[in-house]
Image (cartoon, rainbow, N blue to C red; front, top):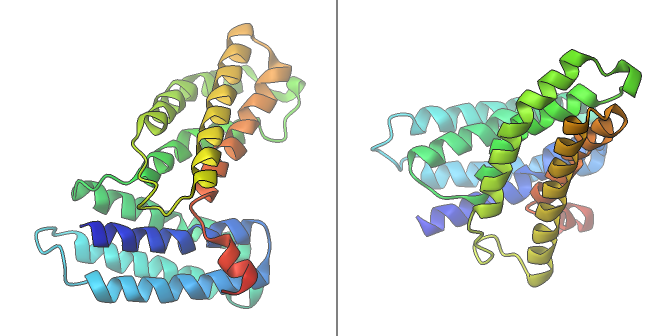
Length: 230
């Protein structure tokens, strides 16, 4: 099981690069990352396709992951359609989450994945709006989403982190701790702004949730490998 978790870590180091780089509209780096993702996936599939015979959904999940990766690779070819790649690959992350949880595999990144839905929705509700544009319905929506976001983020803070498994050095461990603290502060600021009915502060706090959440997730990607071509 430890060996499989390590291989999942290696996969995520590459997987995380593709949505990030395509969102940043870096076609050359995106295509390099996509090639690495396809190669890493083929190795993972070859090694584990016949495993987990006690899981009736294992084969189905691997097939779905392969389909999504192939689709993302196709639409990203030549730098065209890059904007659609992150959405296409979103299912890869959630499918891995489901299969790991069925197998009772404790994996720190899953806690970050859990936060994605409510935090993304909060940020999108406020994005591009001025205080005069923020409706009562918007505020009500954010208010309803925030408790779930805070609860899920509390699970991130409480989760045990295996620095050895993820090959984090002391600097990366400190960054992760700093990022977690920053997101906790952002959530507290949003809660206070909602309590005060302070529209000018609700908007920036809601929008700030996304980068504060994305920063720790990005730590798990091996960006230097693509940038340096190693």
